[in-house]
Image (cartoon, rainbow, N blue to C red):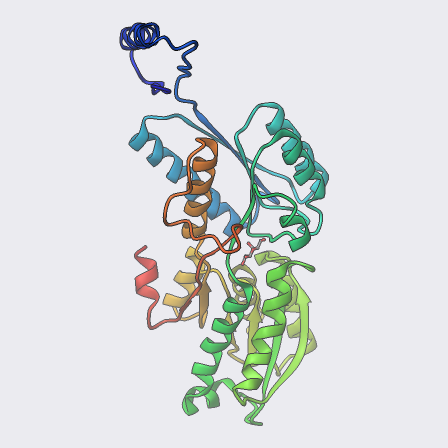
Length: 353
Ligand code: GAL
């Protein structure tokens, strides 16, 4: 007998100690290890506490832990901290959690190209790391076999976003309503996430390429970074509206918050056109905007699936157990959850989730 769950009553524990000691004496064993079942301590470090998508992931993580505690009777300490977009702050937070003997670190890097310090600290203290959402470069990920990454494939999100647009443009009536100036070319703007983020880079380049591959004629009027943020999306869109007062027929946003910010700006400025607007993530607000026909489509980024996967892995690592069967690792390192498309036609299914 190696472990006893922490919720054993005192007398039960005492009885078990006597039994184990007695059997050890009887069978002539030297020492008997009977450490009580260890609590699991999981630290979650996010790049910023104001990111709606990452915030929804941490909420699902908390729910998962509470449920797992009920099922197993084992205590899970889950500590979530944000780094206010400072990699130095995040490095210090990692150090603190390591010194407090956390079993696993789940890290949403601030700077995905700067994972070196965290990996060094983790390797020194033998603390496994699950990076998520902001993918470290391969060179860093391959440094140690106790480093993992959970996320989704940016290319897939861009291809699906393009598919939502091509489906609409393939309908002649819809095409005519989007092509306001009736010149056969769609004039569009792009609202980009953060510079250097894998999702920004891929979504910005792949979506328009897919549209052109599908044979549509497009003209990019402008693109602006809005850092995944609704207010910034709104400000950047107002500037684009001022620059192109009668021309913007479509808004491609790297995420929903910026798409919703663009819609705010369109509404506030009484823009004379009704641009086709698409986002990515499938946040609650975006789903509601699709239901009310303000947002034309989004791509569901499975925050729940990713959060649960990270917790399954963290719990197993913290308990010295094998990963459960549903953890499907690629190259022993990566887990990618699939995206899916959402438009008015299927939004009900997601609203009910
Ligand atoms: C993306 C997501 C964005 C933002 C970003 C943060 O996957 O679509 O909305 O949350 O991650 O790293």
